Length: 567
Picture 1 (cartoon, helix red, strand yellow):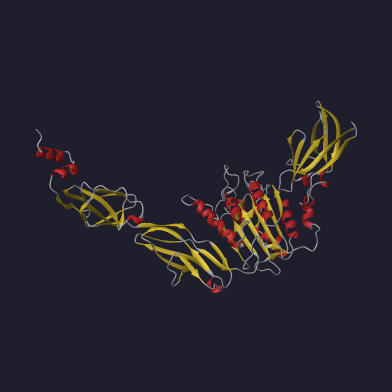
Picture 2: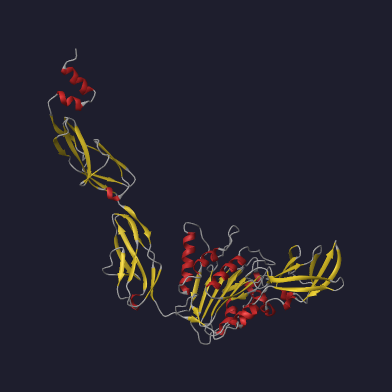
């Protein structure tokens, strides 16, 4: 027989205290373990787990409810509270409400445990949003800069201008009312918490000034990659094509050449200089091989293997050709290596006495900016896997932005620094300038009084043309279409022959030239590089089944851009 006493013991052994409370007298509620045992404060790092325990005795058996501050925690009805600390706001006071509830749901007694305080260990400051890098602001307006950080605890903020502490600017938002010229400078925010201190990037703040205007905007871009005696390069033509498109979008007239010898390069610079007028903006860009000996030099495609300085063009010679035209702004960009030719491989260049080139502007004394894809004694890189060289990859991000021209090159350097972060690096872009006015490559151009094309536009004009060719001895007529071959370059011409069914066409220079400049791209299509080098007309032969059936001549220079006649 099972007595009431036996049943009570059985229920107790099975942990069925709710049923046991019907048989036995009520036992008062007693907390036997508080959450703050063994310590009243728990320090924990983000991402770690902790367990808080509150134990009590009594009959009816105790119920548990956990609180964070004054807020009850959901799904926390056991004597153990398991927490994964993932947020800073999880720190604070934790306690447990222990209740005794009878079979009918009435609360018989409630006790609150002693509190335990959870503290999240400090975390380093992480900047999630930097201030703008460049701000232009009108006089009298309010300047507002801000940053956003992730940090525990909240850091102390202090804003600076050019390393001068700004009073009362001690939050993540800086505000200066009634901005004037005295407020110009580079702003940044210094932040500190118990485990770290950081500074934001500098924000260059300048007063917005009236916009400059140009009488014209003209660019000369040269891509040398197919060298006769030096390593062939892969990206200069792509680099020039990319920059040409951007410059055209912001109003530049662009002259592009590829693979020029030294005399052609000098001729191209003379053409460019002649197109510049007072008040014009000029931009010269060269991509190819180069070196540095006291100043920067660029190499033409015909440079000998052991070259001298006299076989190259130095930067001062470039400036001596262009600067006398007195442009309002001249930007010279050299995308070349700046290394010194090794003495053991080229001893003669180290004994050579260089030519001195003088240059000066007539009126505009602060009009020059000189930019280099790398700094002295350092290489400039291209990668076979990339369509563009490293410098143009980053320059193209900022070339067409509506920012002062010096800011363009600051941003290029910063962008390359960011790209190289954590890597070994040798390429460090640099620039120098005499410019003080707020010139922008995006500045407008004064309206012309005439709709007639300019002299430069006439020189560059190259519409596609179709002409008739008569082969008198056979009475055969055909058409040849003359058009640009490799845009945007002026010195590549395409010739496509039509209405020659069953015939093959061959094309030759009447006077052979070295190196060859005439190539077949596919059946009855040809292209010619630097057609002005051809001495006389082109000879055209037509053949049927391997037998020549007709010949004629084509004076190609009558149909190509006029600019090539001066190249």
